[in-house]
Length: 106
Image (cartoon, rainbow, N blue to C red; front, side, top):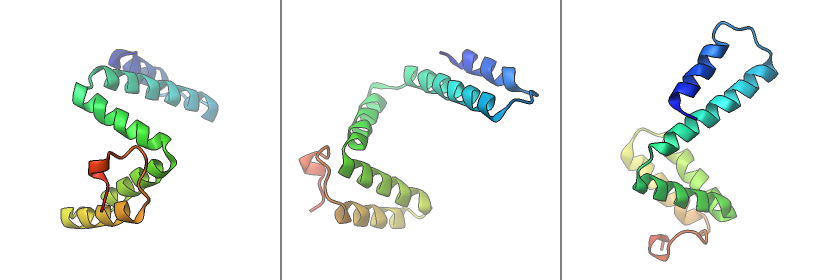
C-alpha cells in the first residue's frame, strides 16, 4: 500500500457515521497502509535498528528492558534524568540474550 491508498481510506470515512466495528476495521487497514509506506522509505540503518528491537521484543527479558527504557525516556524532558533512569533500568533488569556482550551493563 502507499500513502495515496492511506489517503483514500481516510477520505472514505470522512463525515461518515460508522459503527465501532467498521471504524476499527478501517483503522487497522489504515495502520497497515501507513506501516508499509514507512517501511518502503526506511534507510538500511533504520532497518537494522528495527531488526534489533524486533529481536529484543521476541526475548522475554529483552521485552522488559526495552519497554522499561522507552517508558523512562518518554516520562522526562531532561536529558540527564533520562540517561540516569535508563542506566538504572538497564542495570536493574537481567540482560536479555539479544543484547550484544559489549553493550551489557556492568
